[in-house]
Amino acid sequence: MRNFFLHLGKYLAFLATVFERPQRNSLWGQQFLKELQKTGLNSVAITVIVSFFIGAVICIQMSYNIVNPLIPRYLVGLSTRDVLLLELSSTVMCIILAGKVGSNIASEIGSMRVSEQIDAMEMMGVNSAQFLVLPKVISFMAFMPVLVLLSMITGILGGAMSITFSANTTMTDYVNGLQFAFEPYYITYSIIKSVFFAFIISTVSAYYGYYVEGGAIEVGKASTKTVVSVVILILVADLMLTQLLLS
Amino acid sequence: MIRVEHLCKSFDGRQILNNVSTTFNAGQINAVIGKSGSGKSVLIKSVTGLHSIDSGNVFYDDTNLIGLRKNDRKNLLKQIGMLFQGCALFDSLTIEENVMFPLDIHTTQTRAEKLKRVNFCLERVNMPNTNHLFPSEISGGMQKRVAIARAIVLNPKYLFCDEPNSGLDPQTSMVIDQLIKEITQEYNITTVMNTHDMNSIFEVSDQVAFIYQGQLWWNGPRNQLTKTDNAELNDFLFSSPLLRNKKGSS
Image 1 (cartoon, rainbow over the protein chains, first blue to last red):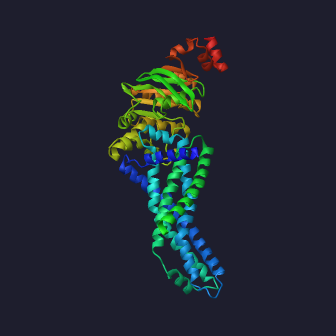
Image 2 (image 1 turned 180 degrees about the vertical axis):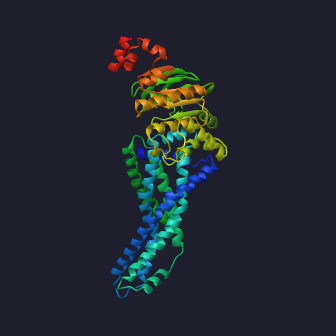
Image 3 (image 1 turned 90 degrees about the vertical axis):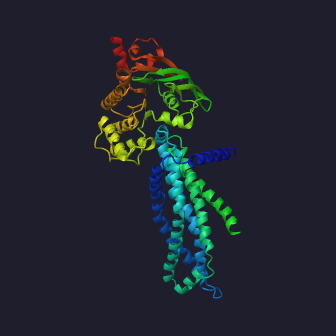
């Protein structure tokens, strides 16, 4: 318990340093654009691939399970849509991105720490935490809604693709299900959640990387710790945010 | 000139530096020597402010580093260049961007002005026309030279070198030593060099501080090194049979 509070205090102090005013706006802008590519654009491919296949699988499973003639066929589209919008495109995608982006941030900053690059920055009078971490946090949070929307669209397209091979459900049923009782707030809810998750992924992984001590083995351990901690924190935050936003 | 007064530093209750007081002179190479784990790197990192210290004072000319306000500290850091053991070049930046980085942070010069200064420094360390290479594309010795260029790009008054020869062959080590000596004299820099390298100690250093078990055990000019009867220093300097025989024959 004592360890938890020690980390919490250190993490909050770290955040206070990260969110200081940037020293040079032009440099900060350049860093932001670089990070937008690294954390955001480079995550598009995995988001599209994972969402497409999971969307297709969800649709097949729904179609397979809903065999009762009393249950309308459009429920396949409706349930696929709701699963994607409410949980998969935000929470599950962020858990996957915790593995990709989170471990990348932790190992990148950790490597800089053990090779004294962070010390070199400090010697130049640079607030290294702010310079390295803030662009990552802001760019990832800014790009996250794009990833979530992409995930929703490709997931639904994946479902549509699987429907073409299904004997039980027609494309008309699927499209009807997608349109039935559509609640636009689900998209807003999903985006709000994902922005919080992006903050957790980027700051927690940066924290673990920034305070690495030792060598390559410790950098690897920090990456592993990052993924484990971030996944747990995302699940806890998901519960809390769902309660707050949907109740 | 840098004056260190009664510097103490401990980690988790373990005393690493104990009441170290010394002076590093301007225009000279001040070597800090000692066994691995004796506290040399901690001394350099404490003097530069990378480690917070338990007690003591560090004066850069008349400015005490300890207790400096953030902006004053930043202004002081502008006058300090540091060459790290592993070079600490930024992997994601080209050599030009690495050397330009301190200028980006501390000056409002135009890009053309900055580029002119970068090229001058790269030529000074014999690394012309390497601007667009990445650190991973050049050898260890070349990386050291780029790190020196980066350390001097802001015309520092103080230069710290943490084991500048580690991992280099004897010939390249001598080139790096000579470069540091030339730069120190050319710009009248106060250079503090943490080293194990006997060539650096005997060929280029002017003053030597020997750290033993976290304490300043011996301090003096280089030419007094071979004449001292300090047992621990002699053990350290003449641990190799070759040097011991040389000392015996002289």
